[in-house]
Image (cartoon, rainbow, N blue to C red; front, side, top):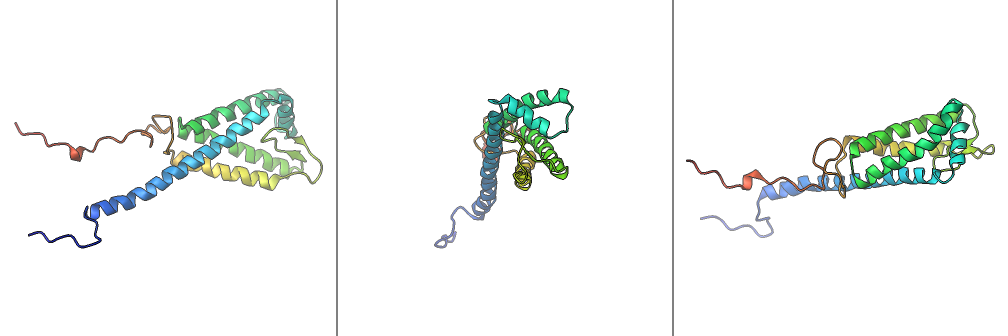
Length: 198
């Protein structure tokens, strides 16, 4: 005779408890990755959208860094907002997340390098990350804060490059060829009836 289940004990057995323990961290990470993806994508879209209405300011911001030949200043100033918006929208919608995260990591690395070199050379400029940019008055620079902000976003981008799976994603794949969290899980083969022997 099978002994009755003790009061307060999970009748489903220890396997259910272990599965719940394994699922909780995974669920928390999926939502954390979703928040990181939306935050990073939103910042990039906003940065690009604020540059487009004033192309002259975008040109002035790029020129202020004194890193590019004059022939490349305008193409970079006009192309950068488009690239930021495209990468940001890919992150927001969850399409090719790993590729978009890698592209954003490259952009942020370039931004950090540009701001750092401007600081090291004693230039008095605004980074132009969200429009405007160009020369500012002495003592009005914000290099440490700008670098810290971009470094934080870079960490998010690198994390999404390593772990692209998240919730609320439109893409059928997460950028690395694996099904994303929005895709239905494959059926459990253990639930299928065994094939009858012929």
